[in-house]
Length: 185
Image (cartoon, rainbow, N blue to C red; front, side, top):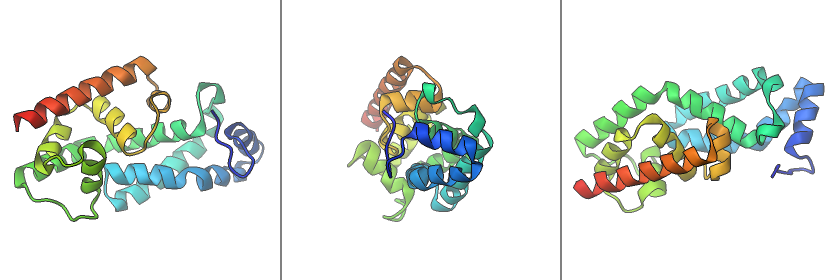
């Protein structure tokens, strides 16, 4: 269902920025915080600042390609953000593996602790970091879009350009892998 904020639906926002590109700032104003929070949960805050801004620059460049019939602006933006995060995938995986090797917990206000709290409250951090590093990109994307961005299965499907059923199967596999990997530790 399109989100209505200040009386405008996503469809009205799209019509507005197609007539006047300057109105794209309304999309930014509505969704920047959510996109930034999601990216900050996946990467560090400095990268989140950069990638959230890049998400909206990319969306602005691709605004004519947005098709409201395929979903709302929010999942579309999260899809762009997830793609940008994927560029950092190897760095993210190396980061989690390094944390798992050291066994040192990050600062309490660090993004890793938010991931731990959202994905598996109370789990041992090094084990969870190792387990997250073992997931494939698709599984990690679905799991973290659910846990950090709190997207619905429908929104995740739209964000990643995959079917609803694929979201469910990736999430199921990710949960099973996490459970198995955490039980083995």
